[in-house]
Image (cartoon, rainbow, N blue to C red; front, side, top):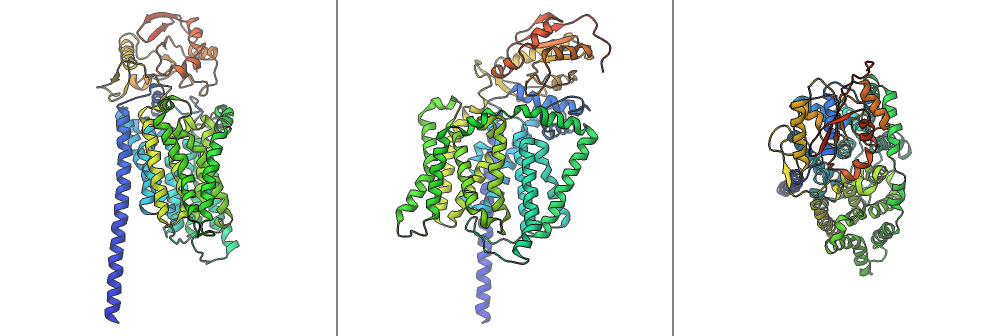
Amino acid sequence: MGKSAFGWTEAVSVFGKRELWRQALVWLAVCVLGVGAGAVHQWQTGRIGVLGDYAYIVDTAWRIAQGEVMYRDFGLPHSPLTFHVQATLIKVFGFSYGVTAWYCTVVNVGYVLLTYGLVRVLVPGWSGVALCVPLVWLAPHGIYPHPFYDPDACLLILLNLNLLHWVATRRVGMVVAFLGGVTTVLPALAKQNVGYPYVVLVVGVVVWWGWVRERWVGGGVEEESQEGGNGEEERLEVAGLRWFGAGVVAGVVGAVVWLGLTCGLGNYWRWVFVSASRRLARPTISETYGNYAPWARGLVLVLGWWLWQQRKRFANLSWMSTASLTLILGPFVVTVAITWLCRHFFFSLNYPLLSLWVPVMILTFGAGLWYLPSALFSLRLIWTLLPWVAVTLTFFSFLSQGYTRSSYGIWAFFVLMVAYVVSPFGSDRRQSLVCWGIALTLTLAAFPYVYHNVRLRYVDHTGDALQTVFSGPLRGFTAYSPHLSNFAELLGFVADHIPEDEPVVCIPQEDPFYVMTGRRNPLPMVIFDRTATPFFPEDIVEAAARRQVKWVIVKRVLQMERILAKEIEGIPEAFSKKYIRVARLKGYDILYRSAPAQADSP
């Protein structure tokens, strides 16, 4: 008996070591993918830079770093967190493009790791790793190389979901659970149209699983794991969830108090909700969801998924599994074929890769409804929550600019939706086939999408050659000529001719002028974008007069001409009525007003 017992113990030990090594190899592979996503971003920084978008973030952060307060001293229709993060980096390290670039690289790495932390809840082992392979190219800063609020919001949601899963399935201290709950409010401070719906979803989930569900099911009830997921039994730590919920409340109260004490809740509401509501381009709802083609592909996916659910009832019909897999993989294979066979799609508005968003949302919504009755009473909180988080937040993200422009920061949601819909395949070998098939097709479609910078079509690519800054704080920034050489000429002119104590207005502020020169922006706005400022041209000129602005720089050769040319319409003409042109550089006009402005500046 002792020998037998010893032999059993030894076998368990060997099995445990093998499992440990297997898990270590899986995580090593995920880390390699994360590093790959970071490397893609570093590669991307040497290929393209967007002056206007970069200036929007860092010049705003520069104002904050110099003591100005968002919404009180200047307005923006965006949540404050991204700008405050970059302001903190400026305070700690000083301004440097290299710092912001490495920040984006770290975001890419963390993005992949946190996504896999949730994927493994749904799909085990190497199948989960496979679904993260496309993120090497589709991590946000591989597509878009600069700091922005969409990637920050998604990263914080991934972080909070991982913390929620940890608290719900592990015995953790009440302080840890409480602090995890506090982080729930951070996505709302990064991007309001995604973050606030997320807070509402988490509050509902915590209330249901932490308090209400136990009364319906009864305490101490052990349930079998659902067909969905990775097949591992989970237990629900109700006490941890309740402390997590307390942290959510504390985080919301803390955010309200912080906003009230700094900028004022009225100012915050005016800019972040009232002014920003104009960005909800309602026609994009019909543009995004009104075409029949995405719905047709979505119904194909739903049919394939439904056939898989019915396979057990028709075990003798081997064609059913084959038909199911064909229908599920078909839209992905077709997308790759269109991508590689029709090169003109690389520059069309509806890029083939992006056309998969709506079909996958439809499939996930259908699968979520299928499991909803049992899911509400399941122990598997994250498995139940993920489809609704992914679909809901994707929908709200698309409200601003549709899937063609808003999807670059949220590909993790796409991966989570795919993981959810394939989770019912369980330990079947076909699950691995589906996961690797989807991963391969997505990767093949993602590479040209990133390589051709489809998301950055609004940036001028017509220059003869790439220019890179090799010295100074902007070292490493790359763009097509002549935009960087023109900007360098402007900086030289300003240093030689405009005293440091005289305020300067830049139109349309496409360049990171203020952070590069160390000057302060004298106007109550950051960029001349109709979605970012409610002021008319006459209001802007009047504000400049009140602040005794003598110098105005008008940029003629725009890198983002397709966007900004319309946004600044009428503004240069309004300034020309009050100012005279004193210099004409290769890309800029320098305007000057010698007469003293009004002395009643605030």
